[in-house]
Image (cartoon, rainbow, N blue to C red; front, side, top):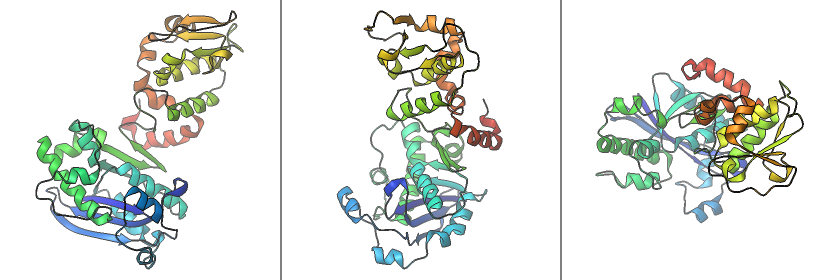
Length: 345
């Protein structure tokens, strides 16, 4: 069977969801509907009415109606069975958000985390039809032929809309249902051991190899976790820094470089004035430096530290192994590989 699900929340303040609706639709592989329902939930939290109005959103029921219903703890076993049954395929729309809502509210409610895989219908459109514009559920649903008028932001209705969008995707793409669920890995995601995994990679980071704010935080955590292993004379106590333009476009390579420098007893910084050695690569701008600072090319840097150039240039393909070295990731990654041996690199 196939389970299409959606959630609504009373609020998500503090990064924690307070779920008030769990809607679902069960279908066969021809997408014929077998069962549908909307489980209302008492979120035991205030409703962000002002925020909803400001965003142009409106829940389908009043706060008083939600509060008449059982809390998440009393819906837990049903939700767990539905999403984790090995005979069920799970679908959603922008599903990583719903998986994150479940994760955070399970934690808030003192409930045991569940592991389940899902297929994100939105990513089928984005990655396999090449759609780059904003792909909101209601916008895609409006493209579906003979689509019934449904009220958006009601969890059961949104699940029904997702089923219809799946039908539309199959028609437009020319794929069979079997092909869509087996040949589109970028649409797959997973909630595993209290973390959401998406986009075919294990760790969540900004794609495109840019040193975004998120990736900069990861870079800092990575640097903090590396310990000197083979100190080298001439490197100990020295600071290395990439020229800013190059650094901002080479997140994965920066991790490789930082590990080599720190292993040799040096330090990696992103502040040019603190650097003893400034590494410049193709695309780097002219660097202003003090007399004590030396400017070296990426090729010279790689040769000095014995880093294979091909490995360095293809660091993006090894990003999971690199980010797994961050201390807070290490134990989780070991569990993930045991459960997913096919992912081992």
